[in-house]
Length: 222
Image (cartoon, rainbow, N blue to C red; front, side, top):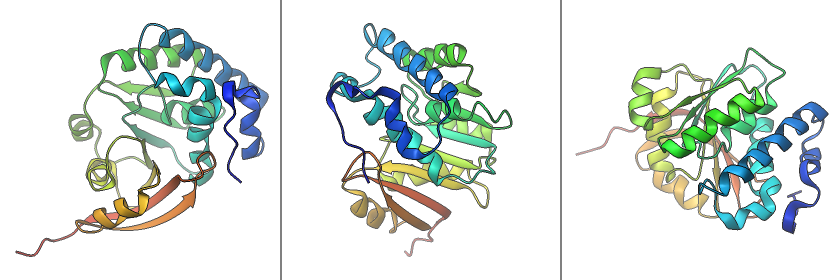
């Protein structure tokens, strides 16, 4: 059942209880991350101000839900257009108890990249910031991601083209999408072949989590 969005998120980290066992240590680190976000937000526009009242639902839980869709065997996770750390840094914080897991946060905005570096230092998350455009970073990184994620970065046809550059066979792509997800899938199907499973979002009644595999560019007929 979707989480209710409540003003000021009075329950705080307790909204994560919907996802099963979340350790007190993970909650504590995420609470520190939320405080750091609030401090930086006073000076830098990291997230839409209107979402801060519901930060635990709109940002933390929205990101955290992707963990439920990921296989436990993943080792390298790449998050495209990480912004203020959603979803990638939340995933990295949640994975602190698994030192073999690493998250790469790709973010070209210098101020947001600086915040991500500060947040990694403060939280001890096993993550690295790539302050570059996706296209240039993908060329250096290569096809070695187990999981590629993104939220509110680009329409699906474009997003698949970006994510595919990181994807060897078997890579899982996890994208958070809104109410237009059906149209995006249809548009992407014109140029890409892929397998997709869409699941209801735990935080947005109209949103979906798209789990995509086996992405291949279609041969265009002349």
